[in-house]
Amino acid sequence: MGGGVGLSVHGKYKVATQNTVFAMPETGIGFFCDVGGSHFLPRLPSNIGVYLALTGARLKGNQLITAGIASHFISAELLPELESRIAGITSPEQIEHVLNSYHKNTDNAQIPHLEDINDCFGRSSVEDIWEALENHKSEWSKSQLETLSKMSPTSLKVVFSQIKRGSKLNLGECFKMEYRMSQQFMKQNDFREGVRALLVDKDKNPRWKPATIKEVTDTMVEEYFKPLSPEHELPIEDRHYSKL
Image: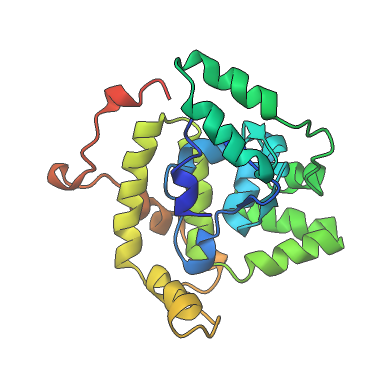
């Protein structure tokens, strides 16, 4: 979850087991999907990335194959054996062959309401997503609205913009953008308030400022993406990431 995702999701091979749980829950603490979330989330099919980023929804096990997050699904009981096999590999070309030999078929890895996710979360703004969910009039859409209503309105709108921008950037550019975002989040109310409500006082009653998505203006969102002064930008070399 969250930061733990960033340690593996950008690799060529990502192994999930029946015990794997994936989530990007940052909007619930007034933050954003960091660790390169701007790069991999918009590249997931069926607007799953937008859905995961805004709602913090969890995917489990072989659902990660369907979502395009994991490359292989392997039974947890076989991991020690797999690790031993990989340790004995003498050339990188053998890795995929070994992983494929342990990979289980995931044809039944359904993500519930995938068509609804694609439709409702494929809109041009958070407001349009909200309206689509209201018009859907189902138990599923009601549940999504209840979830979104608990999230930081600022985070929702900033993260939505982050995902749209990240779809056009390479990984290095995404890291630079996310660093700029992090500096603005540290200045504002919601990250501190979200951590307080969930992790410190644990009252689960954050007081978001602004309190509604209507109060979060485009000008406010834009502040999170403004370049920093040269000496404060993330020192990262594009040549390492330009093809990612």
